[in-house]
Length: 293
Image (cartoon, rainbow, N blue to C red; front, side):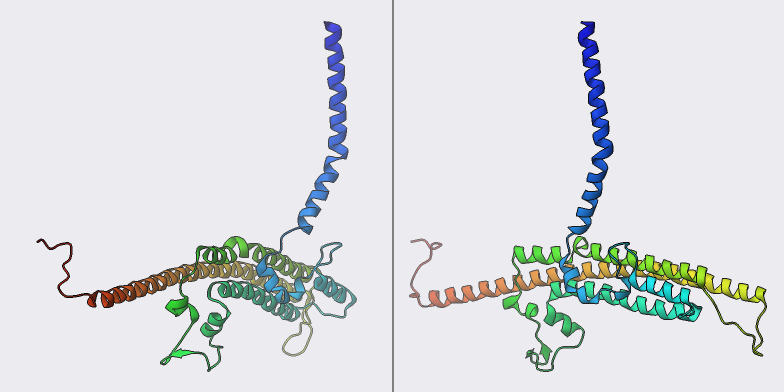
């Protein structure tokens, strides 16, 4: 019996060693491969496809080391002295990346509006439709305001909801915001390490070393404060845009439901009118079921 138990112990120990080797050698490489697969196979949303040409150029990264291409070039230019990385130069780059980022975010939400209202309606709301657009009297006609085209089936309603939900839009927005934040932090770090200012007094004389240090410190603090405020404002703007989009979608569905109900009531009224026309042709002496002999 003891011999059997000892044999089983040896077997279990050998099995444990084998499992440990597999865990150390095989699983880590499997995990890396899985992570890479997730990155490579990450689904590109329809919103991303629609706004591909609006992606911020300054946020493009090298595939090898995942470093921002433009930021690395800027660092090299600053290191060689080709670019003086001053507070003024920071403002130029900041405004450029800020415009690119917000243009991309705007494109994502414009895509969602088009999914709800259609391209024609969005252009109408933005005041960019042609003067030859159809009208009813003096009122421009938008197709989903016409009762005949107001009813949306369940499949189309579900499609609109899915294409404009936070699940469909949030992924590209958060990815871009994270890149945007990293890029701004990179600009701050670059000023901290290689920032320079040409500082002179009103008379043109050079300032003292202490004055230069104080000016640089104030500029660096201002840059960090500006960056943190921009990050917060970007998130707040995104949150407000999502709330507005949700209200637009709800109002649209309610309006379409109301228009569809009017359309069905109009059909019902017409059917009653047709029945009345038929009944009026019957002989006047015809007795109905409520009359007695």
